Length: 532
Image (tube, rainbow, N blue to C red):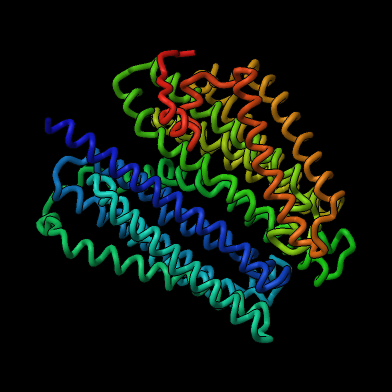
């Protein structure tokens, strides 16, 4: 009975954390649409140039390090040793984050210069303050997760995003109503990160005060040697952070090379900044597209860990294959749907339909990152970290090496091509380095059927777009785009799922694993007996 209660507690906590993470990621993606509309392309460019620095810091505080720390806490049995371990990790992170803070504060001019825009220096300095809160947020979120208490992490995560998003939108509205410089706007918008971090930390401190933590941990002998602890933080914690920050790393490479590449291509500085601001729209769409696949991959991790621990190889293979196949299918459908509706979605969300091909290509990242994250979850459940780190660093290096060259030769579309190339390198390397663990997860027969469904869906959506445009139902281009999107999306969704059902693309197990669709099938009384 005791074990059952503990299992239920863990399941409830995992569900709460998954929902909170979903809400936080959704907020983090959606707010950029009204924000871009208020501040324009140049204002969005200023914000997006520095955003990857914030995003990487938040990855440490929200996902990567808390997951790693929680694992260490679970492996440590004595409550006094758990607190002592958390304090030691916190002290190590304080040193690391103080170094990051000093670099961003005192080398802001150098960083901005490397971005080919010295006026970005105050914006870099604004975001640096956030790193002062990262050690405390990541440590105690991880500690409570390890104690199977998910509420502090879940609630603080949502609170932090709500405060940050609200602050940014208020700054955006103020900038829209006044004649303030986009750089001043960016500086104030980035201050939302440390403000939100402070409020989240205050919430966690209040929670800690309501829980009496063991105070006699100081005289305990460390359970892990400091040198080994640092090594594990770098390898295991670092890998988890890298996976969560893959797109942010690639965006950081864009921040340092796209503007200079566009200037080499022949654009003036202002024109290059404007184009970069338009190109940055694609990151919003990719982040929206990633929300479901990230939540899905995160949700299956406990099941994979449990199956691996009990050596249930058949169950492990079924769960891994099901998750990868459904995530791949849904992300392919999203990418194809975005490509089919790109002019309309671009105009509807951002008021103009520029760089449609560039943004459509970039949105293929949804598919590659979905596969990458699912691969990582499978390897993580088997405690394999090094190969993932090697693959991600190699892909990132490719992006750094070719990005400016591609942009200088092909224009802004070169940045999308460089991103796709780097992600392909990551996926292929993970496959090569982990052939045994990742074998037989993808069904090529299923992919063939899926290709037929996706082509049919694309043609149907484009036909719908053509028909509505021909009818000329609205004079306002944005209203016309809204009508097209509202009609075409349901048609695309219906054709995709009807086609998958007709061609028997998914097994019952896979149908049940698709978010929302699984709920519908359960309502209809479908149960899974097959193991195909």
